Length: 338
Image (cartoon, rainbow, N blue to C red; front, side, top):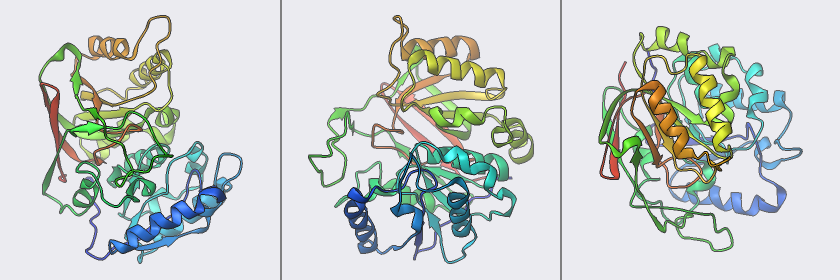
């Protein structure tokens, strides 16, 4: 069965960098992030890897794995949120003792999503795909982002519904700070292949497709075992966000996942907004979605609120979800049940 952690009212956040740390030039920015969170009543424990970055990673794989495990095992730490993602989290997976991990929320996205998915697949512990710590440094949180607290405080057996945002951010404007971090200027529209109204139910699994694709065919990507052991053959709703892949690379990745059985017992697939999906020879991201729809014959929705074009929902790997999309708007209702 799925194990759902739950936050207490007084929360200590452990901050570690299992992928990329903060370069020295941005230390001041991240210190202000921690200050903002402490003003909101959180206790912040930043560990050594947060402050180091060299050759595309915060530290060696063993050092990153050891620090992450120490926070997972520390009963004084209630929640783990990395500062942001990165590139090489995959290096630490073989150095983690998954079966020794007890239920505790880990929140993040981008490269962090690889650990989130691996942890849920290996142990049945629910994990949360949502904002990184740097995304929470604003004077206030937008309506979509701020749901992370309510989701992580949800009691087992209860449900929570998140709705499509009103507007999203088209591009980052780091030289033009916003009180809520993001510049939400573009109208949000959730889309479906065929422009059809869809209703999808199943267990959520997913993450940044750029990185989670690399555990296909490895012990860390054993979806079949997860389905049999933890959800008793139940249906899956996959959610993917594309950071950098071209349309053809995305297509190759999805075909590989299909051939590996990741889409067996799949009730639908959700794609987040993406600034990638670069066309190749006239082949576009929309073409990828249509081809997948024809092959799997399940609902395919895209431009949803998650990924590198904020704001984003907090999606829980392992939660039972109902997704409904109609006329460009929609909601995702998550239930913490076994």
